[in-house]
Length: 286
Image (cartoon, rainbow, N blue to C red):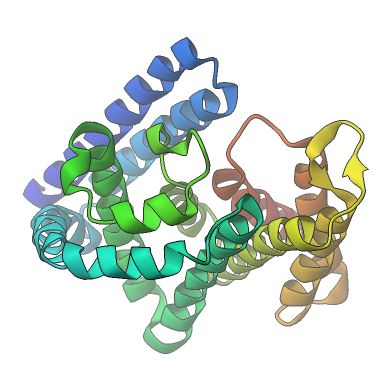
């Protein structure tokens, strides 16, 4: 029970931080960040309870070890900061406008492919363990970015890809990993993995197509374009149809399109994969 208790305390502590962060954002009138942070807090509390009750799980040991592993990685990454700074100076010449920045930012969604590769080659247990390691690592580095930015190991990347005003927000990669952790717990592994990959690819294509090809703005959301929404639907459908029947692929693509069009007050990296996974699961029940 010792490791289960420690792991639960770690996740609960992150949940408390997320809750405090969400309440703090009310002073900045950032509704999306506030709701996303508060929802993240409840997800982390739920995961903490689940880990505590799952007394036979090796996962609790992994979560406990994630703290020293994260500390070691942060120290190592900070040693390479001069090299990262040189890379930033080189790339900074090419990242001069918001369009290029957005495309570069969305290319990081390709890292979500690690999820499906790990699942295919190493199975369910390793996939879950790596996801929780990533959750702790990314969240702790985000906290470092808020409180001690001098030692934030990804400062160079953040300067290149974060949008204006995002330096005080939980990172999109962190929201994605939290969404992944919950999806893997709520749904079948297969459904969760394909939903999360489809969501990441669909969201990335929407932003890239919108920035590079978009000419027709949505009347109710000037930051988004019709071209971007079409790209989101087409990409999500294409990814899903590789793994599911056409009707399920259509449901998943429609769900992502709806989220893209209505733009709910929740970070899409947190919401998209969960909604698609839920839709695919409900389809199996009827």
